[in-house]
Image (cartoon, rainbow, N blue to C red; front, side, top):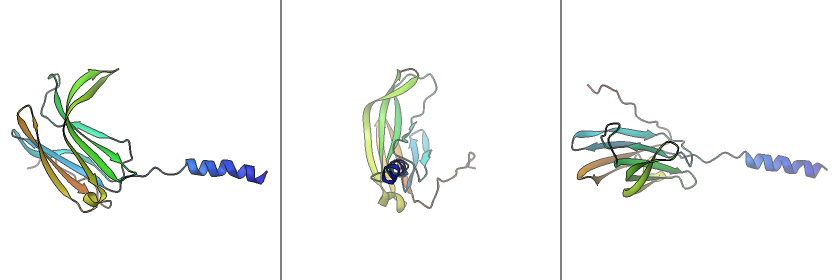
Length: 153
């Protein structure tokens, strides 16, 4: 009887294991020919798998028809890497507004060595004849996302 009562406890403890988290983060800056490279997004250390972060990185107004340029970063905490991609997207309706990738312009994988060393990478993608520069900087585990003044004066 005592053995039978230990089994649920062992199963419960196994189910309560903590999900792995990313040991580093990434900071993104984007610019084009009409604006200097500026802060786009930042993911601090500690993200979990499945917490994909995405944002539009081209300069467009609400209501302007697609396509638009997007970037997303998907953490894989098991392998301690981020999979980053820049893509052209079209808007589709699926019970709300969703953006469907149509053409991937760049894909990068950033590992723990890149993040912990504060590594830096830069690449350019062409979207509708316009070059966009994407800068990526690793954020070590002991650091946080940089803070930026809204007024850079």
